[in-house]
Image (cartoon, rainbow, N blue to C red; front, top):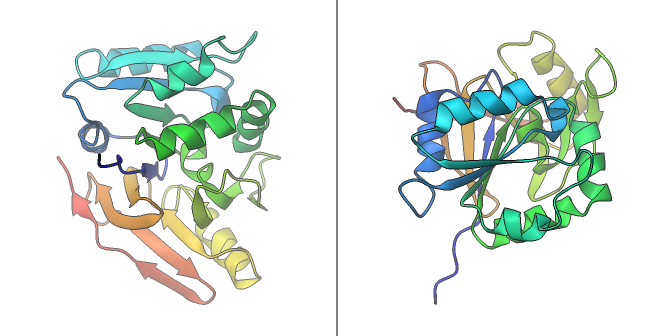
Length: 225
């Protein structure tokens, strides 16, 4: 029996536009996939969760995960029963701390290995990597080496919509921070296993980048509509 592929779509922030979201949903094994929205990074903002329900009403069977006041008793079964898990943006460090306290980091790895498509934007991009550029600790940007490590290296979202992201990330990498990937807003980086297979975007000129010491290489993007 062929094992399902492990897939992650890491998006660069600025929201995930419908064409990119549709491309993510198309990776699932059923026409109307089961999708779990995880809003831990934005303190489980109810308005954002409702917005997700509105967006996906006719495209996915949506549920959302809350850790407050406590996680559901069937946390593992809930996650493994999904086709897609979508992680929203916000405070990456706080999110990871909550996940680890409740063992959700291990649940996510199991889901990924079993073929559940993992995706997300901003904090939902950074979390899958070993390291990332974040404003989790204040308005200043810092390098954080505390990601889940499903994907090697580092990540930087908001590459074209926050003016300090690019210079901070390239400087960090030049000084020994792990090399990795950056993504403009509204751009998704699609990984199969741990290998990047495609960059998708809904706008011309927006793309992803491979960033190494002294080098920033734009990657070709497929425009989706």
